[in-house]
Amino acid sequence: MGKQRYRWLLLSVAIILSSAYFFIFSKSGLLERMKLDNEKKSIITRAESLKAGNARLRKILDNYRAGVYPDSDMVTSGYTGPNEKIIVFRGFDTRTRESSNKKNDETFYIFDLGTLRIIWIVISLLVMGTMLLCGIRIKEQQSP
Image (tube, rainbow, N blue to C red; front, side):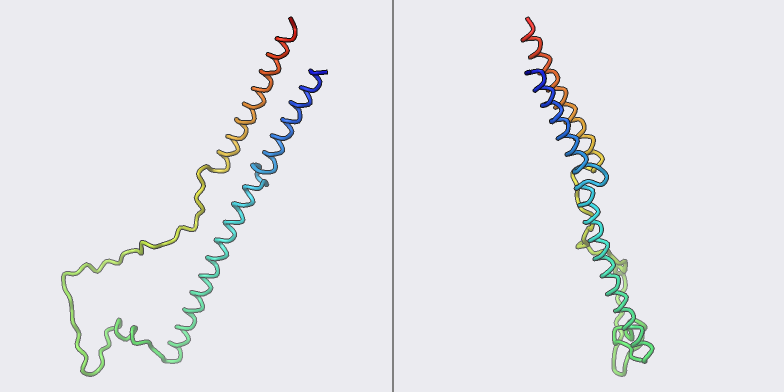
């Protein structure tokens, strides 16, 4: 009777470990869906920011077509109004620099999902191996 109960216990642990793998760690599991959901959200926010930038550029283009030019464009193109002076600075670094406050859209994971899957399989094999060894030792102790 004890041997039969041990087999059922071993089978139920194997079923629980494999179900956890299939529902959480598999390609269609919970972690993969969460990762895809985060990627979807970042793509949507990027698309929205591109739409806003496109709308801003269309507005500027419409202003150019209407003949309305902003003062900043006049200055950068070299136009000076009456009684204005031009000051030229020489010897300054004119290279543009990237902003240091850029956001990184990628989510930080300690382990890749493939690595987590392998770790889960190894842990499951260790648990099952330990249970089998314990069962063999109990069987050896009961047999003399």
